[in-house]
Image (cartoon, rainbow, N blue to C red; front, side):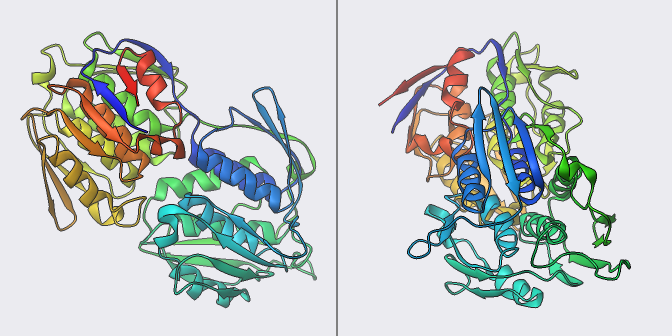
Length: 449
């Protein structure tokens, strides 16, 4: 699908999409716990659908009731055919693949974990190294998907590298918590505290670990002691009573998706737009977009129920270059580049090393696609330098099958000197299927072909 975005003036209000980071973690926690979980504001992205398919195959029962999702589970008890396709498919979701792999290992059945698209090229060496230490049998495709896993996982004190992605650690934390509920593992037989510790080196994206721990807490799972993000200690403790009672969980608004709307307002809304449904106290790492917006000089007001954002009083010429460290929130690179394209001067964004193993190699992809729009981007060690304020030109760009590249291009088009055409524009379905519709609701001219 091709989408054409015309230069536009934005106005009005919109609700942020549901957070897939929150939604997928909630799916995992609901699977692990015993009982009924009621998920409010469930996500509808392709990644969310992949997580729902996974937990069904691992034993959960799903009931869709209006805008609620009811999940009934008795833990990880795979419902797979006796022969043939005995596995789960994570689609293109890196979080689902990294998080559910250790959770799959709670079972004593042999299960295949697969995916599609760019997920097939992402490195899985972490599991090849770590899971055998936890008594899990694993076979990989030379460090890539598909994986063949056979548990049950036996939680032990180990040391892991957190430099590639915090999502690997999220999966281990969930699996360790689930082990106390698992019929193959169980807790301490003598009632004594048998603590185990996961020591982590070079941990990135700490706020996402905060989100994991918060979700585990709300679902009544065994939450480890966080030792300043250097290690996480699980103590053998009685199962929280919440595991036997229905719980209600509301999926947060998504700061990752909303970041594109906020940037759109900063460059194309003379009278501000209004974004609702975001928790300003969220642990989501991408909430940091607010700092960049404040630093660039746009008009912004942050309130508990609503965020207002628009052009500065002096217009687009009043936007100024900024510096930003995106090491813990690498998904902000695309919207930050769209913003920086309109900021006078050279914007410096740190954390480029976190971009190599996304849906595309985002550092290079951003450099190449924005060059088509006349924006020069320099990659220098771990820094990205964006030379903005020179004008964004009409162009034909390609999403590279990367949802965030498509959205960044669409936002950058809002004040270009002509139409911008995005090829393979449907890539947004991975995280934010309603993105173009939401832009249109705010006043953007969007055409499909």
